[in-house]
Figure 1: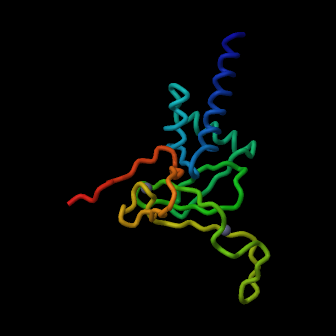
Figure 2: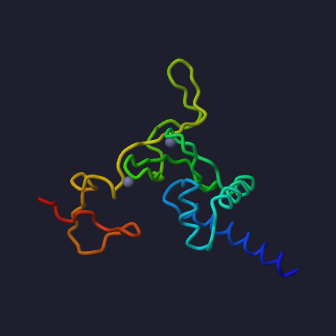
Figure 3: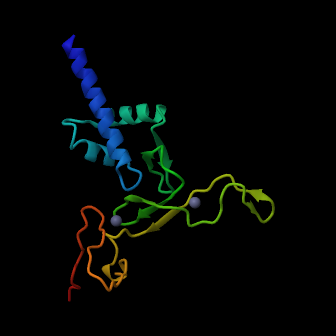
Length: 163
Ligand SMILES: [Zn+2]
Ligand SMILES: [Zn+2]
């Protein structure tokens, strides 16, 4: 029946869109954020469908749930290696921080005989977009002319200080 086929195609497209959005994000996403972004690809995508698709992807172990101290559950690729999260307290977005800034691998024995299995770390602060431009990443001065790599959609905020 062509109608069943259409439904199957739509399900596959929804699943693909939700997975792509999660895999390509700068950090774990809430269900609402997944809906916003996947909705650009799938017309009339609803929140119930996003929940259902996320549950399928969790079961298939393609994504995992991340619950941060703010209590919100977010979702990220199951393939990511150990990393930490930075939550912007202004826009509430969460960003992945590469690598581990805590010297505490599994097996580390802490004073008193506590053996580390794993650790989680959530850093709070302001992201580059929300932060005070005066304390934004200092520009490296280069002696040669070249374009610095910029994150996608980078737009300098308040290029000149207002008086
Ligand atoms: Zn922010
Ligand atoms: Zn770590």
